Length: 212
Image 1 (cartoon, rainbow, N blue to C red):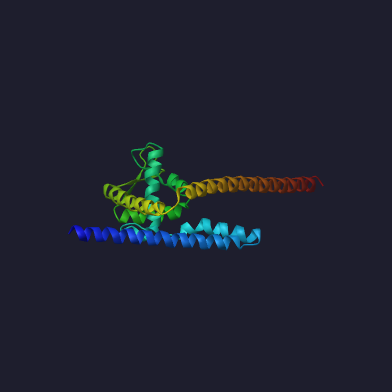
Image 2: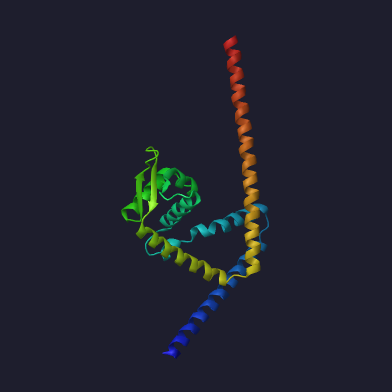
């Protein structure tokens, strides 16, 4: 029995080592591809492709009870409720804002979760214009199980990742995010000024036309 256990542990270790080696080869191949890029335009395209790669990972494929969207939404309910220190659910509008999703999409997903018995919707007694949603007992059990699975997945990935490389990657992503956020704000302000100028010009033209 002990030999069988040792053999299984050895097989797992070899599989992890092989996976790490494959990951190393994959990363090395990608670095060679990056070095071969000549134009800044191609580099920008590759950076954005790399940043969006994680969106293609189907986390829901390893979760027994939730798809990816449902998992994100249920975690959203949990975190919003914790953030506002509410014991009686969260507003649908707050949930849509937190998850950066359109209200109709959130409503459809909540309906699906409600049919599974994982969440409950009800009218806010303090303001009957609002609909609140909360996680049920069975929903919390499913969410806890799903978080355990995803945390184990992340742990296994990070075990195969060099810590210094990971620190540099995190620093770079934060840097690029701050730069992107800054540029977006500049563009928004520029567009607003142009729109205000256009509106002002039209108003002046209308005034002149009326006076004449």
